[in-house]
Amino acid sequence: MRLGHTPSVSGPELALVVSVFIACTVEAVEALTIVLAVGATRSWSSALYGCTAATLVLAVVVAVFGAALTHFPVDTLRVVIGGLLLVFGLQWLRKAILRAAGMKALRDESAAFASESAAALSADTRSVAGGIDAYAFIVSFKGVLLEGLEVAVIVLTFGANQHRVPLAAAAALAAILLVALAGVAARAPLARVPENTMKFAVGVMLTSFGTFWGAEGAGASWPGEDVALLGLVPGVLLAAVAMTVWLRRAGAAGAARPDIA
Amino acid sequence: MSRLGRGVAALWSFVVGDDPVTALGVVVALALTALITSSGVPAWWVMPVAAVGLLVLSLLRASR
Image 1 (cartoon, rainbow over the protein chains, first blue to last red):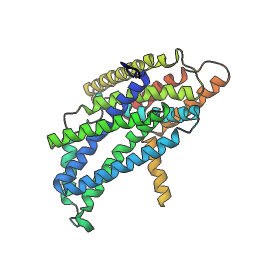
Image 2: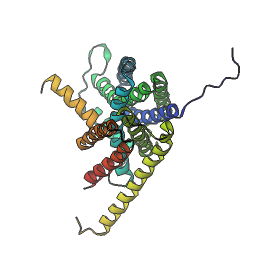
Image 3: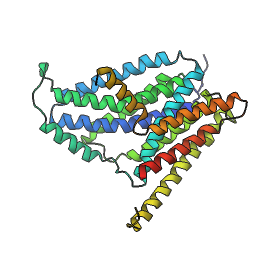
Image 4: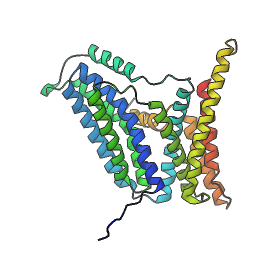
């Protein structure tokens, strides 16, 4: 038995954990707002049943597809995963840049909570058998499932590519538990979480890794192999920040000259 | 719309989102990378250029 052995974590594995954790935190904050709203206004037990059911569905999706994905040839996996991550990454990054530049409204968890609560109060009050409030169950289930699906894809794609689906799932679970604990402690939507900054960071990571794996899967060889990521991630970040500054200035110039369309 | 049609529409919306041009651009860039690589020329630069270019185009469309 070896004593003093410290398991080493590679750069891509660290990026996997960080990306999945941040992405899952953002989506969990949004899901928490929905669960809190229907729980507080309709039924806590039904909202929690819906939340649990959706989490179980997501766990099954990750387990089944995670096992299946590891049997694909690595190049096929990388080109599909790279393409998918890049499409997701560019979508996250575009929205984050537009929000940071003031061209799209920042998500307001307090406003989302108020809106969900109002809708829940005005909805039909009939319940299904077993005392479960159908509205609270379905809204909670749908909210958690929809917010979680994108994270499930990130868990699967990052995890399968490095054959570390359990590590990715653990990072996702840690984020969900952290947000759930914070939500229970606060008993209010987590309005102070810097969601857009986190989305910006996830967008940069997804775009960088999607670019890297997509090119590798399509047959290209990166100069320096994995070390190329050390240039790619800061490069994408720099480009995204530059685009934010450019859009801010364009927006300010447009506001200063209202006669120009 | 049939259940299958709704499923396909939901999948399309989930993967492609509200910007199909970007998704199409990614597919074209991957194909271009494979094509250039198969001719023996280094093609690692295609995807980073495509990613930045597609993001700029997407932002321009969104900010109009």
